[in-house]
Length: 197
Image (cartoon, rainbow, N blue to C red; front, side, top):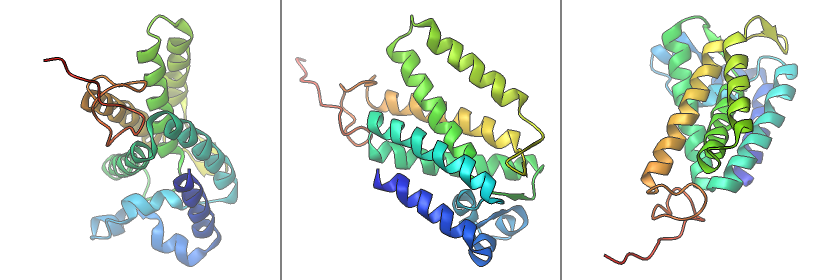
């Protein structure tokens, strides 16, 4: 959980400082010229305080829920994997020359959590309904929110990344969704099952 609050605090510090925002933001031209750290640090930058106030509580809540379920290592890896993939999609799409915010990374955590719910309770229709509403929300996004033009492609990329990450995590754990399987690196609660063969 310390990881989550460190990210929230760092995002606040970066957002509060014009110098730090300039050094950290996902500026596509600068990434292309070699400043690749911006693919991760850009998510700490928020273009307005309104955006920060919207993004950070969602990030804290979603990653808190994901880490409680899947472990700190999985949470950190999901955040890094989604930050890089969301940034890559923003760069390739070419719609935004400057990008910032944690919302795309948060979409990854939400998608991963949804996938866990569906895998653990495949007959629970409410999970599929929530997933359908989430997909409709992602596809209908546009315009301006929190004083910033919405980067629809970043949110979709985050959701796809979260689902892929969770599928890979479960596969590497040998099917461990809720606490049994061999992949303790990704899930501290997974216990190695005794093998009889």
